[in-house]
Image (tube, rainbow, N blue to C red; front, side):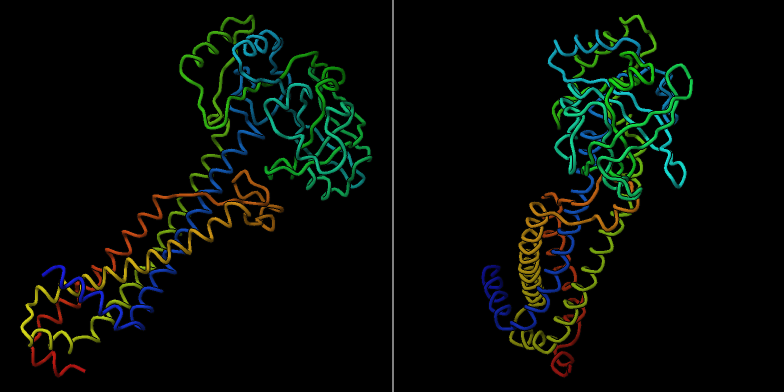
Length: 414
């Protein structure tokens, strides 16, 4: 009997083509919107984490405890005095690492001064950890010209600066004395990390050694291990043992999740908002599904009465309606999944230009312009199952009400 009811339900779907199409379309567009939105939000989160590692924190860092405690001030006096033994040991273990010095300074312009974040780096080793050189859009990177500076393209545009211009930088040397530098802009970069484009300047560690009296010391020693791989526990213990064996005893080993904790907390807070957005999309789709299924069943009350008059039991009629509703749910959800997947493929390979927002404001995520979607197959499968069961459940309530009526009342229903 179940097979007969299933075939009859299939024939009814074909017989009521218009109703089937309208109901399935409601489900399809809801599922498509859910898949596209979830893919983009997942992609933004993944891209932000990758950019955080590739352009800001590295996979991990070795710093002095005081430097970490006073991280917001970027004081270069809190430096690692002799990073060379650490670098050589890590190199022997096959771990890429480089030293950096982050500090705050003031760029002196005709209109006044602007506080900026500066990073002094070793051009020979920095490329093993960070991927900045290939994002230079004008001029040269520090490997070609170690006596100039490279700044974010957005920052240069905001300040009406270009390559070849000289700027004056005022900051403090390691001994605390004020130091003024006149440096030439030799390159502009436009990276996937918006904060770098918006407000960061890079210079060579050779200049920091001479002008800021660093003499080989660095404020952080940045480590990079393969993307997607966390440092295993044994290697983590070896690195901790290494830094504890140094003459300078106040060194700490910090994972990227600790270094980027503030950014991750902002992203986590935003993800709650995006979850609410996804819930609203599901809710809107659910309302559409319920509404169309209610209309589809109520307009067939006379037909249901006829089926009862012909001897079909209420249980069999209920099964028939559930089979029909399930068929509509499957049809709509698969169509929505196909459409959503097709659009998602485009966003995965072509991306979506988000620069109209990220150009002028920090939205919390470490992205600049082009964002790329990602696959979340759990959402796709869950959406198909949810919409199918929702369609079946939506049909169950009016069907039970219709079947509770007398056959004569069903036949007189308009």
